[in-house]
Amino acid sequence: MATLDATVTCGLKWSYRRADEIGTALDKPDGASQTTKYATGAAANQANVVYRTQVTLLTIGQLTVDIDLRGATRAIYGDLLEMTNLRALFLRNRSSRAGGGDDVRVGPQGAANGLTAPWGSQAAGYNLLRTGAILCLNSPIDGWAVSDSARIIRLQHAGLSYQIDVNVVAIGTRAL
Image 1 (tube, rainbow, N blue to C red):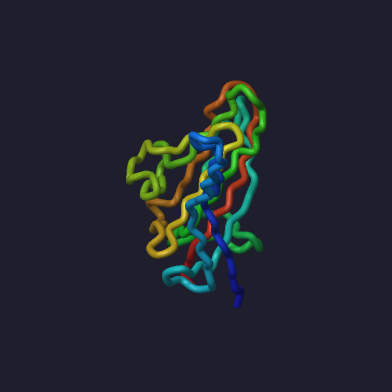
Image 2 (image 1 turned 90 degrees about the vertical axis):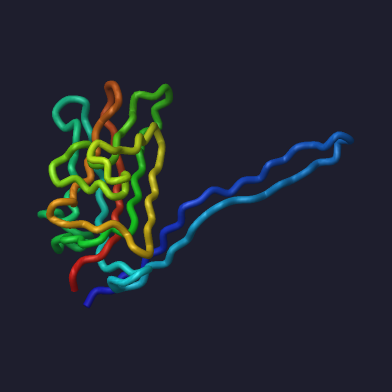
């Protein structure tokens, strides 16, 4: 039996510095983050399947790519993904081209059998990944149910004229 140990960390740390009225330096380090450790299983804080890929979106031809969390998509070691619950989703727009134009829409966006729950159950919903942006969705307790009628996450080129590479990692559960 395969085992899975995964850690998802989403957050931001900062240090804000300024001088007060008499020139004394003030330092205010702070941050906000969530770290979830997933163990093997299908209950809260557990997962048993990982999907990882890099998608290339083109301006001509392949404008969209549908990630099928239940269909013929293969998990990390080649077995069928067959996800029943999405626990975490990480996407990174790998473009570093300044000046914009390399945007990617992520969400159901009207796809047949679109997974809408992470986007407020809106069939046309999406997040916009700007140049260099990341998106981290993490729901360790309940996750988002994946079924035959709610299984597609669409990536769509929303930029102007360049190909865009996107890293995609999904962690979830499937029937054992």
